[in-house]
Length: 182
Image 1 (cartoon, rainbow, N blue to C red):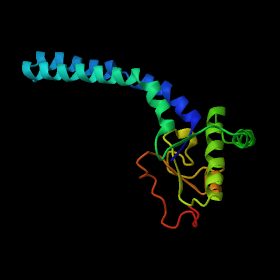
Image 2: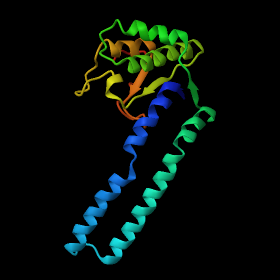
Image 3: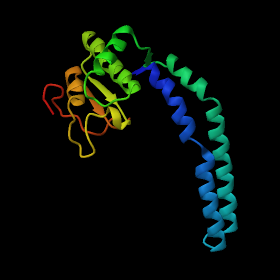
Image 4: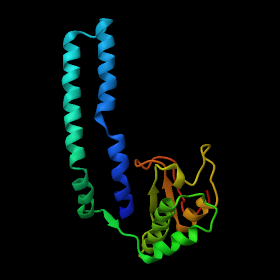
């Protein structure tokens, strides 16, 4: 697995923003107050739930304190290559800016990294290339599932199948990919 280093760097901010245990836990605590008043939750259930919520918050806060160390450890993981942008990738990002992709510069850099790395891997003999993407900006299809040129063409030319999740389940890759046009 290959990950552009800028993706690891960029991951820190959304993880810190989205993984705030207090928000989820407080919503459940508010429910408990109401449920206890309506007597749909027993005092024992409420106590147990509050203990679990406290442990949940403690665990997530501990993991967030280790986030920088965790992200840095990705560089040393077996089977994972976190690669920096090279000059060819930066040049490709500039080339992409002339296309009507409607991407922010950061997304252009990621796309360029994916496309250039795909070429490097293909030249090294790799044939099964895919890109897992949950950011709608870099998906080559619209909300209806229709392909959106020129982005879809760039991935096809690079022989990179794009998944919309990290389970690599959707969209399904055709059996004859990349020898057939989608």
